[in-house]
Structure formats: C-alpha cells, structure tokens
Length: 428
Image 1 (tube, rainbow, N blue to C red):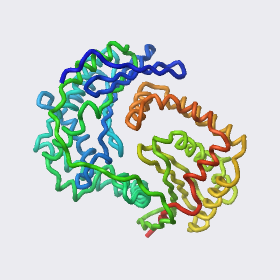
Image 2 (cartoon, rainbow, N blue to C red):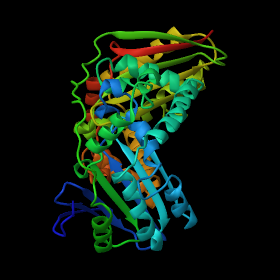
Image 3 (cartoon, rainbow, N blue to C red):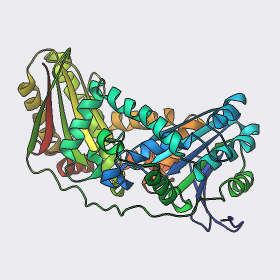
Image 4 (cartoon, helix red, strand yellow):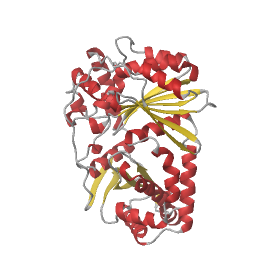
C-alpha cells in the first residue's frame, strides 16, 4: 500500500515546543518534533499490540514476536539490522508491555535515511521462519524461568493477579510457559499480520530532522505492509472495583526482610487528572524523608527499613501500590498504620505547603524526564498509544491546576482503607 502525500497535520505547542501529529490516509500516525540543536534523531515505532490484544491461549505472543522481529525479513538476514545500526554508532532496542510493543532507534541525524528503512522492513515484513521460531522460543522460555529468580517480579506479578481478576492486566507480559510451548509459527505470523498494520502503528521522530523530511522518509519506508490476517477475537470487560480486602501470603526462600505490599485500582487514561492526582498523593505518602509514611514509619518509629509508593498509568486502569520493607515481622501493625494514613487523606485535606511542594517536585521531575530526544520520543509514543501524544505536554499544567479539594476527592474515589489488595511476603 502506497502512502499518499496528502495527509492531515495537527500542531500543538506547549513550553515553546512544537509537536506535529501527522495522520496518513492508510491509518499510520507520525509524531514529529524538530530539535535543531540535537546531533541525533530518535525513531521510536509504537505498535498497539501487547497483553491486551493477545487471545488468552496465546499469552506471551507479543513479547515473543518482539524477539522474532529482530530475526529479519526475506531481504534482511538475522544480525543485518544490528550491524547497520551499530556500524554507524547507533543503538536500537525494543520493549513489550500490557498495552503496546515499541522498537526504538537512536542514530546521528545523517544516518537515519540509511537505518530507518531496515527497521521499517523488519517490522512490516517479518519473516518468522519455522527454524528461527523454535530457536528463539528457547530464549524466551529461559527468560520466563529466570524471572522466578527476581523476587520483585514475583511479588508484583502476584499483586497484579490478585487485583486484576478478570482483566488481561493480571497476566505476565512474558507469557505462560505451557501456552508458549503450544504456539506455532503460523499463529505468530497470523498475529503479526493482524496487528502490525498501519492503523495500529505510530512512528515517532524526534531530533535534528525537519517535518517535511520526516514525512517523506516515513512515506518511503512505511508503505509495504503485510497482507492482512485476522486473529481470534479478543474482548474483555472493565475490572470491577475491589469490595473487600483481598489477602495473600508469599513464602520465599532466602528472603532477607519481610515485606508488605498493598494495592488499589486507579483510573485509566480516560481520567488523566485523577491519575496525576494519585501521582501526587504517592509523593505525599512516601516522597522523601518528610513525607507522611516515611516520617512516621521509618524516621520516627523505626518500624521499616524503607517504604515506597508507586503509581503506573495504563490505558484501561492503573495500579497504585505501597511497599514496605520491614525491620522485623510486624506486618499487621504496618498495615494498620498505612490504613490510618489513607483514612486521613480522605477525611482531612492536605496542607497548602504539602500541595506546593508536591507540585514543584512533579514539575521538576517532568522537566528532568524530557531533556533528551530519547525521553521525549518515548513519552510521546506512550501517550499516543494510550490516547494522544499531546497529553504528555499537558502534564505540568494539570499538576498546577490540582487543588487541595480535588486531591481529597480523588483520594476518596480511588483509595480506601477498607477495600484493597494486600500481600505479606515472608521467608520460608
């Protein structure tokens, strides 16, 4: 399919940064930002293919396909792409998650016309030969097995499967070993030809490349998509709210300290303000020595070695977790103190000083996370997969518009001292 030169362009400008979103007639999207002062260009290709697009019996096929993409096409042999990129001083890699897979390339701007065609071809025309499929499957299976040596991975996967009881977010990105052993090269070829199509793909170009050159390069490189196929239909409902306390225990050998992790369901991208509010509430609870839980549990009472709070924004719903590393086996006491602090967030407004400090911290963190073309390309592609790229530029404005009253309302909506998931991790 040849891309037409006629396309729609939307321009957004925040913080004096021009961000172009170009829509091609066949459904392909290009996100472009010109940074003349940069000596490099980042090409980051995002595909709407992850855990949420996998048939349940095909669990892990998105991550497996990510591996197979680098095996090349009929014209590009295994290793050719890496050689072309690395011989010009560039780097390339890929990652798979619940809502996406993306492939990124960083190179000096003068070499992008030589390297981007290689990336485009292995993405659009992946060979997925039977021989390479079975060789690489052993690599993926070993990655799954070695993940069980990572206690952090085991704990978070257990928490996810406890919180998400119907949604695909409960499954591991790496997949299930028994199911992967049943999958065939034909299934993967079908999956590739279903999802690696223009309407599911966003190309992000950030760095020393102008808009017209970007459009021309993408038109030339991303035109020969595979003949379409159709995988088994995937459908799922929204995860219902937690209406009780979901408890679980993990016993892990050679665990140095007991751990406690508590989790709540947060909003998806449809409520970005609510998600950013939870980001701010995580700072109020554990964002430094003067934050509420750190000050109470670590600095004053010496009940924990450390305590952290994490919030990860996803397309359909998000996960808000509090993790404590205990100095002794006092799990119930720590859980009660955390519950009391969640209750206070609901019933007592945070102070104006807490609000100001958190707004400043989040805005500074945003600035530090948007310093390089690699960071910007990743941010734009991520938000485009979730909804649209320009939401990434609105983050600091939303932070500044949050009020004490809004934060209290979002704490009441998403955080509850009565309804949550909790995992106690002990040594065996």
